[in-house]
Length: 332
Image 1 (cartoon, rainbow, N blue to C red):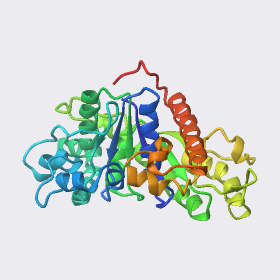
Image 2: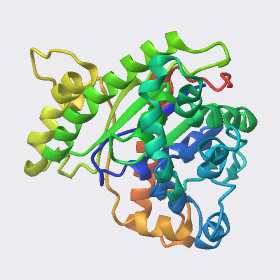
Image 3: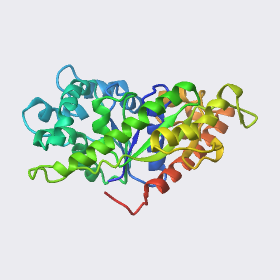
């Protein structure tokens, strides 16, 4: 299963929008993507669904059709994970709906993580809960690729989400805070990967299958960059130039001896503009920015931005497919 987590412990870089548009572009190009909302704030679900549907999915009592509902029996002590509801957004695109109630299981995930190193059965069942739910859903959806959205933190929910990820993409903004975020994220990600690799050697016989927990860094996406006459504005340029070395040192654990120009950095997957004027229309229309039409209000100069947005995300998705080894013939 090719599963890509979009992860950065800095908020506000446009991560959820990136997941949403990347998923729709995968569908546009003939793939079958499955989005998974593992952020308790559920911004991906809010972006994808209208308020009436969200009310139905989030009633006052239990939420059986969300990710929280899928893992509830395990964490409630009444059973194991159950089949998740797949919200069909199109013929090709599905969504596993997020839920604020996921925040309630964070303590249990945190407690059981070190117990995996002791070979405890429940520890493995808890830590792999998301992966097992996603795997079954991906098989049912016949998904080519799973895109996982997580919150901007280094907590236990995100750690369990990373265990379910074969690859990790890092959205970054050209600012000091993003560089500091990389310095926190990179070592933590490597530590999680190492710990899980040690734990899988201690899987008890009662556990039939566990994720590899590869968490392979696929690269970074430069978000919301500002340009003037094709060049980054002065305020952001210096931070952009520091990103290649920061990514290599923090995320890959490499020692850099020379600087790399960000525009030619092979670790940079794509640069995505903000497209500020299109996002409000896209939210209103419940569709990606690159699919906006004149009927949605995208007229005049907006249509030029729509076309540019389409080209940007098309290039992004084609490059992602190459980096993760995805072909249209590769099914889960």
